[in-house]
Length: 133
Image (tube, rainbow, N blue to C red; front, side):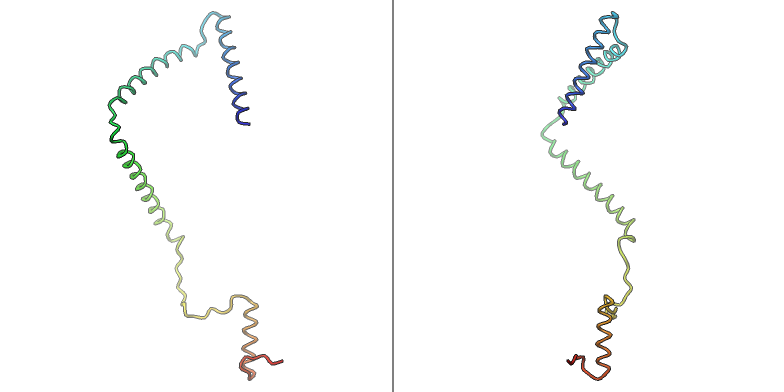
């Protein structure tokens, strides 16, 4: 599907290119954007020549050191941001528990509470918690 969409877009652009060229030939003058593009071409050419000149001065022996320094700085920045965020949100993520751990909290469910109450009544009636049939 993607190749079909790319094909249709390129077909439309080629048709537009032929239409623009035929209009230029029919009118005998250039379209207004072409002059702008010619000015940009000269600017892009000078920019590429400057990049080529700067590229000649790069020492490729130190690129591994530079990339490791950049990744280290990025890692340190991310860790600092994470620490700052964790510090600001710490009261949200940590809950203070003031309850006594040794205190009996009771049954977890109503069914277990009913069973424990039933056992307590059996013990109170005189047995040791045994159920006799």
